[in-house]
Image 1: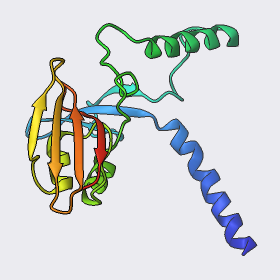
Image 2: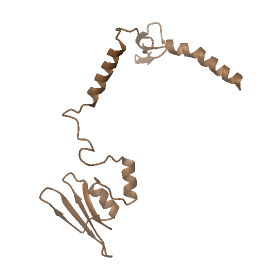
Image 3: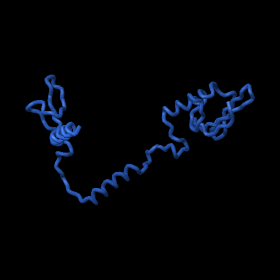
Image 4: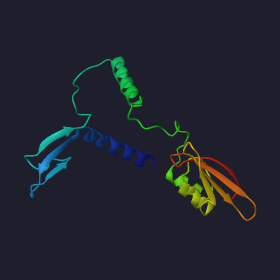
Length: 168
């Protein structure tokens, strides 16, 4: 067992320097005139396009503090919301529910906030018995079953379920 581990370590140690020094991407022109990129030199006239980070020379020297401040500045910029940033799910009161979770809830006949009218129709199995529209654009749907149960749902103007009450 120890002998196999030593062989593995020796093989990795032998291959590691080759992996670290091989770093270029070559641009070649194939026989049909098509441009081909390769990690190995394809012909004598191949041109080196880029090298990996290990073999690139450093163009500037910064102190660790300057590097850290630059990283923080970049991170801070990516987190700041802009005017074009869409409203997040937390802002509009709708929890983020992935497509698979959403489907599983519908198949399991579970009602959840922010589901659409079509999704609620699939959960209940039919459309409402009657509906009414409020002045603020919200819509109420009502169902009544033969057993006397009733179910009421309120949708906002963006077609998202905001409130429900009852049993179906």
